[in-house]
Image (tube, rainbow, N blue to C red; front, side):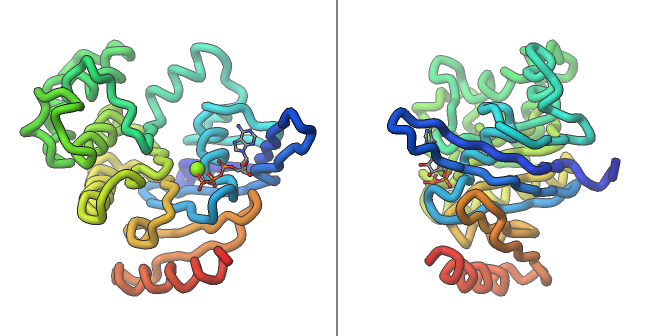
Length: 251
Ligand SMILES: Nc1ncnc2c1ncn2[C@@H]1O[C@H](COP(=O)(O)OP(=O)(O)OP(=O)(O)O)[C@@H](O)[C@H]1O
Ligand SMILES: [Mg+2]
């Protein structure tokens, strides 16, 4: 096992069976790796298989074929409570619609994964620490409906990070946010990933969001069509190359 690789997706396929008999091949024999501390964006036109990929990797949906290793563990081999427990401990998921529990405060929402795992030790400090990193310590005792979309999303990021997950998966987490909030959310991911030594796999349509990442993978018809690596620290440079490539790949 290569210790530098935190996510290893091998030959994963997923076909949806539909009532009219026209099955859709959403993901085709796909290989993908994410390294430790690496931030990777997944782009591609609508229907290219981005959400299916995330759902299959995170176990929200079952794959037809292939293997997924997270930190060396073959996650398709786990079953029942072991899957749920592995996911809680090692994987963070951030959703487009935040998925916070409305009857709990932001602080309580962030605590949920720690409480389920019985990790009460130092819980107050852990929550406060991660809330400070993503800049929401002043709204911890408000309810989700009392704060902005960007703040809710940052709470979602805290919840995904509070367990110090090895890898965070996010499917269009900035899809409902304005450009400024999207930028803040990406800065939070960067700070939090650096602090926790986590990696990120993020689906986005937004070249600006993708330019925060180290690498961009373009999907086309369920396959990896192209990959781009950030060569310099210059975000603007990377943004322009992503835009150019997007024009070519998304036609
Ligand atoms: N539950 C489903 N049943 C049948 N087909 C589906 C289902 N979900 C997705 N598909 C099909 O699988 C393909 C991939 O869909 P997927 O949702 O992964 O795309 P996506 O890249 O996330 O698109 P978007 O950018 O619009 O979110 C599409 O052709 C879609 O119509
Ligand atoms: Mg999608």
